[in-house]
Amino acid sequence: MQPTSQYATFFQRLLAHIIDTVLVGTPVIALVFYILVPMFLNFPVIQAAKDKEVELAIELYTSQVYIALLSAICMAFVLTIFAISKWQATPGKRIIGIYISMRNGAKPQFRAAFGRFISLPLFLLLLQFFERRETYQKLSDLKTPGRAITNIEQLEQYLNGPVTALTTLIILVVISFWYLKIVFSSEHTAVHDTLFETRVLQGKK
Image (tube, rainbow, N blue to C red; front, side, top):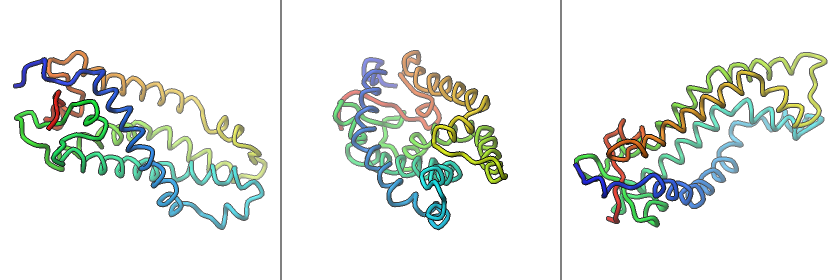
């Protein structure tokens, strides 16, 4: 076991995460939305719609599960490549001066690294199951005569009901617990570190 002083702190990891969001997350999400997402959209229906902006939003809502899953997989894959490299760190962690290691000190393997990056997004998608079911039902109801939505604001108000609000609250609680565990655990581990036997240490490889 490493001395406690060698484990990366909550604030070091938070700063690294913010940097990764900018340096890695932005281009990955751009790739997903501008190159891969169009595969899920029904462009003939969008083009034929009277209000194309609303129809595009409906198409995105309909495909949100696939889009979220695809984004999470792409992001996790890119971060994993960095984690299993000689750096053993994402760009953000490298800049801050921390790195990922297995609990026994070994270099992370692909399965452990990918698992630690994909676990929270997959868990959050599972939590959104009831919200998505409600959303899909409402999207189906929009096809009923007299249910026309004329702008994005109306669409968001129509889709965001009590289930959505409750799901959002639960997700915030889960994310808070997931990462605040770093502050209170002796090895400064988040939940994904515990699940996949990884640790984040101070220093550079």
